Amino acid sequence: MIEVTEVSKRFGSTVALDGVSLTASAGAVVGLLGPNGAGKTTLVRILATLLAPDAGTVRIAGHDVVRDARAVRQRIGLAGQSAAVDELLTGRENLLLIARLYGLDRAEARQRTDAVLERFDLTEAARRRVRTYSGGMRRRLDLGATLVGRPSVILLDEPTAGLDPRSRREVWEFVDQLAAGGATVLLTSQYLEELERLAHRVVVIDRGRVIAEGEPDELKRLFGGHAGATLDDVFFALTANDA
Ligand SMILES: Nc1ncnc2c1ncn2[C@@H]1O[C@H](COP(=O)(O)OP(=O)(O)O)[C@@H](O)[C@H]1O
Ligand SMILES: [Mg+2]
Image (tube, rainbow, N blue to C red):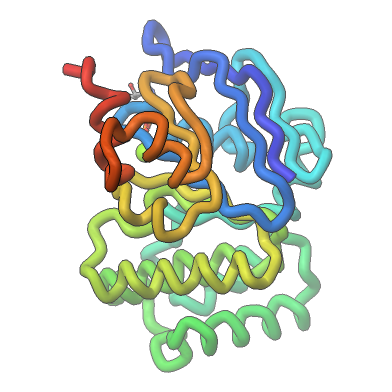
């Protein structure tokens, strides 16, 4: 469902991605683990057609993100650091706008918007500007926005960053439900226990390169260094040379 092959991206002299390859099959939850600056957001933006790679190819459900960006956009939902809800619009207006961007007609857009507002407990706040929302409400709107177009691939860039434990748990449940519903999820995080809890497979990236990948248990066995190792141990072992 997601096929990333030898993708590189620079910003001036900064190499953000340096030959990254990864795949996610339909229904998989793949975790992208890496420290700040590793290249996670850059990769998510490329997958979401918001940024073109300098080299390499990315296909989503068989569609090339550069040549076939429109088809890709219709299949993905994006939330997190790189997503944008408009502060000046109401929650409802934001969702309607996104629904129209997905190409839904007016009636469908309304129907999907109402369903999402209901599902994320935002019906009462729907006609208030997002500017007035609490952090938790914004996050729910952001997650809800990913579902408006009924995407088959969902990209979540550090969806729990800065959340309190309860909101974080809500995001976890959301990911579980997506997976149960058969969606393919790519999830980035710096929280290791989060990926251990959610991801079927974890790809560790650092300085724009994939440095390890496998099932959480497998990574712990290979790189954890001792019985009972955690994903944190793996993470620190692999990134130990970083400044
Ligand atoms: N638009 C940009 N212009 C210049 N440098 C960028 C830009 N976006 C990202 N970078 C740089 O690319 C590297 C990877 O960034 P990013 O993908 O945001 O990492 P992460 O999401 O893992 O923290 C960092 O060194 C970052 O400073
Ligand atoms: Mg980031």
